[in-house]
Length: 169
Image 1: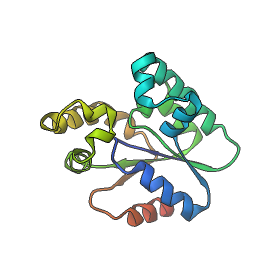
Image 2: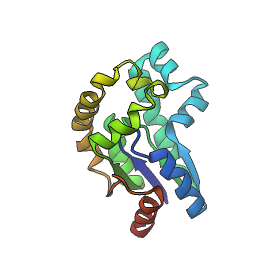
Image 3: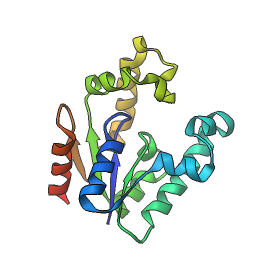
Image 4: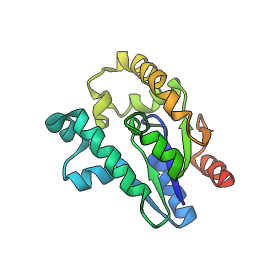
């Protein structure tokens, strides 16, 4: 079985995936890290040198590769992954998917302190960050809502979120 975690950046996909993988005894693969390893370049560098179209094409190819693995695993997606190509359709047909849903305020609070670590929001400026998140969420929610399950993260502990996922498996 493949478990796919999706949602906006800073919704907790990587953190939840790591702890969930320990609890279930299966590997957790962060799609962005997998892309960086295979492309031998950072996501930022790929965007800069080869462009977003190239990145999105590769992202879809690597996602399909991971969903076709024989062994069980958890796949933590990039925030935009479900929104391009036929990625969401492929996720729906080949995994149990969980949307980690966070409010604009929760995402703002989490991203506000780490804008330098997030290339997509680093250049936006803190004064524009909340509006940027709101616009992006509006565009992406249609895709995120296609996940089989929605887990509202809010102020819940990571362990509560993991317990909810395990109950739904």
